[in-house]
Length: 386
Ligand SMILES: [Zn+2]
Image (cartoon, rainbow, N blue to C red):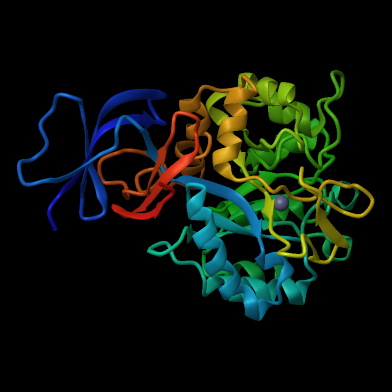
């Protein structure tokens, strides 16, 4: 196949933190090179003029519930097919379908079903590139909207069986390091190379520090489901903000975290802060249940009947626009928080989330206002808004 040049583009390089005029040379679905504005592309290359619009790597969502959590296991495949197509419209090209704290049997069935849906090479939708288990090994008192009946201590037999069943496709587990069995769980995750993330926890600093020594390296939805920050008692939020060995992610919808706290987190964590959606799609009725009671989308976010915040209705393109308008990040930094940073956490930055030569040409074309104009998968335009 001939090479393709996207020229007259503004290249957002999330690793360099820059936006520079230039062109992107693509060959066989992969980025071959970034070219300066005056650099001539190969003579036989096809080219497309991007009219000065910005190009970034496709977004990676570490935490996406979508519609599948509201569905029985047998409907997961159809649900993810639909999600994959809608995610493209918002620039997300790869994501981790994220489970909730279902009881053992229900969780096992869904993990099995999800295994059959992980398809990193998907061509017609955002790719589910692995799973994120959010719970069940979390603190009941920090459940948030997690189904209380499924939250449980870690038992090695159950845990190993579940992780074996996932065939290496569990990439991330959100856990509370203070619950019974958490030490064993962290050892198991470290052995398997799974990202151990602190979340839905009320742990004290000492237990978190021990967890970090055992491999804990990330924090799930900073400020949510972890108790408030306290200046004399670090707790989860305090450790998350001040401990350089922990990266964090955050729901940047302006509802789950106040914009001023997004600014604070961005200053404290810098290149260790990532943006997630934690998106839930209960369907046309705008409400549904995944075991914790009926959640409803009130337009701002999803909530349980008692007002407890559940997931968001956020998309990552909006998260990026918010992070910029909140004054928390430059656009290149906000793009990095949805691309190179999560890719590095997952160890896939040579493949996704960067403009490195050799990486997949999964790309997003953005307007000056940050709206998604086009999405590309493996060097092919799969969504165009104009
Ligand atoms: Zn979640």
